Length: 249
Image (cartoon, rainbow, N blue to C red; front, side, top):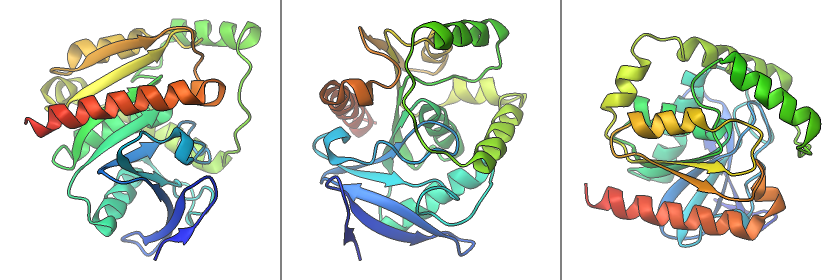
């Protein structure tokens, strides 16, 4: 049974296939959307009704070992398995994956691993699948001089294990072939004033069949925090487009 929570979001508990209880927030009504926030091992900062795309039933899973979810350090494959356990428990046949930052990268991995369960991906301000020195140098220079980061709690052990598995995954020899063959509709959206270079998102949009790339001008990486109304508007429109596209397939 769902319990009343803060910020207009109800609280649901789901037991993973290995017995670990996972916390999931939910709000709204309509087609199902799983919302994945950024920062490996970070608390779910998007679990607020005012940030959720309008006209959809939105689910906000606390990552295993973070927030109100039990468990601990885990790899990306376990994160995907947890999403599948949640999807099955709530009775959703398929859903849209909406991710911000690291959540965008995880949503793409989810679509590759479970394409029959992900209707579409909306990835906002993602990192992309690389360990590029020039990208990192530009990011570090921007972080030192321009962007005021939002302070978000995280669990170091979960961060380290996910980061390690991410680096292993992006070196898999079949990754780019799988992306080029993926039939799941994807939208990649960059924040115009993000200190993170956007070329990895542009490359993904060119590689994945039928994917698109857009830019929200004049906003920083965490515009869910600085421009919450605009964030909700962008997410709502993107999810509506994804819902329409996937319905025709």
